Length: 116
Length: 113
Image (tube, rainbow over all chains, first blue to last red):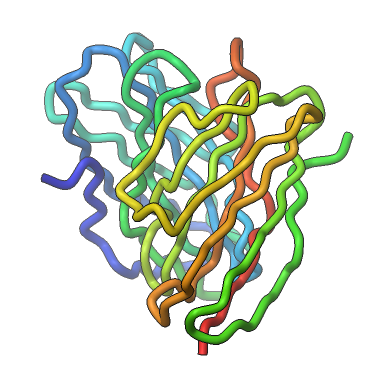
């Protein structure tokens, strides 16, 4: 079974509008971390936001927020007030266990296009 | 504060050859992970090094090997290259404790002809 599933290969959003990128995960480990990364065409993965499995509140970082629904095993990324520079690939990732030694699993990504 | 650096940025090899990719972690980080990202896909975990030892390994054949040096930098070696090894190879670093995310380098684009 896939550890991370991103069902939207591509998304379009109008500049200044909000957009939600979907991510579901699969794990039986009670301790895990969920991450979102942005990958521009240059290739570098840029960390956006992190949510721990025991965190009570949804994570927020500037225009990024993570809609964490533990029972549904979903961790959707919400980008508010989209900008042209937000156009990129977005990857959801999970680290099982509470140690940085544990490997990360990535989804297949969502390509976001922001229209002027 | 220097981030994660990788070299070379691009590389072209032929089938059967061997390649070595290099990574220097972010300052203060001592754990290095390597990923393979094929075109149009998400990164796939290859292995992770800490204290000069391989700590975790993904589902990659023994043709993929690595090394970590005392200064925490790392190398990824791939032997007997196949066409399917063409990909973006990403290095990521974390501190062993106290940090929740890993930081990625710009990657090395490998093309096998």
